[in-house]
Image (cartoon, rainbow, N blue to C red):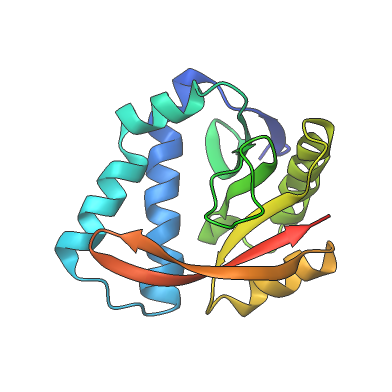
Length: 175
């Protein structure tokens, strides 16, 4: 087995990124946390978030950045940061948001989440004069503790749509 490489995502990664995002979402929120999403809502969300076309569109978004952790041609984790879109009265698009930080079940414990988080935070700080933002599911205590260790504090809450289902999300801010 070769070494894990962290690199910027490329357009040709879209299918693998989508598959990794889809599986990691299911592993984490459906199987791990046991959120009982109605099947139609879950499938609509997964398709809109992780099919190839929406993934290609997100990869091409101006002002956004993507990184992947790869070993032997297999994507193990990814991070995405870009202009803030969280619904908070003090949030502005020119601020930066960590939109996704996904590590596959098979790659848990390898330190990839921390490496991708550090890389993302450094990039975000270099691309804004404002605060940094993260949305995190209200029941994900592990992620909340990780972000708190990096200086993020709860700044608000909102309902995140998964189809017609709504997850309660915390809005975290640093700076």
